[in-house]
Image (tube, rainbow over all chains, first blue to last red; front, side, top):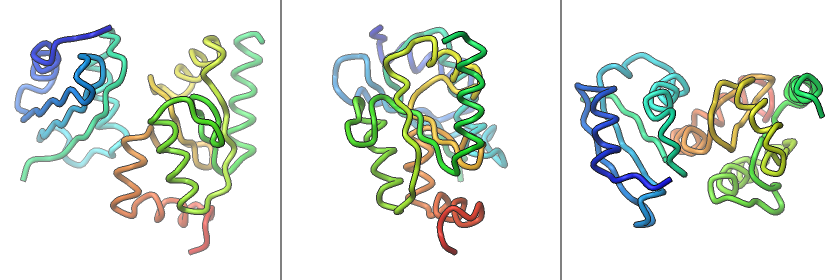
Length: 74
Length: 110
C-alpha cells in the first residue's frame, strides 16, 4: 500500500523522537523506501535488535518494501 | 500442511543445515531483488546453503514469520539462529562481520 514519505517520516519520528531520519523513495512509486535512522537508542544494541525496533514502529502500515539502515550518531 | 507440520519442518531445516536462506523464489531463480542480493552474498562467500522458497505458501510464510519474529523475506539462519534480512546481510558483508560470524560458527574456513 503506498504511503507518503512525510507520513513515513512522522511514524519514525514518533517512535524515535531523538533521531535524524532520511527517507528515500527508491522507485518513485511511494511503495519502496530506503530509510536511514541515526539514533542514540541504538547504541550498544545488536544490529538485529535495532532493525526489530524499526520494524515494530512500522508494523501495521503495510508498506511494500522498506530497506533499513540504522546508525548511532557520532 | 498444518501449522504444526510447517513449524516442525522449519525447525528441522534450520537445525539440520548450517545455513538456510528463506527467500522469495530460489537461489537459481530469485523472485525478488532483496532475495537475489541475499543469495548472491552467500554465493560470493562460497557458502553452501539450503534455499527455501517461502513465496508460494502464505501459511508457510506466516508460520516462519512467527517462528523467527521477523516480518520480511529473505531470512538468513546460521546454525539455527536468525542473522537477519537482506539489509543486515549487506551491511555485515560490507563490514566483514558476516564472514567473521560464519568463521566463528565453523561454516567457512577460518
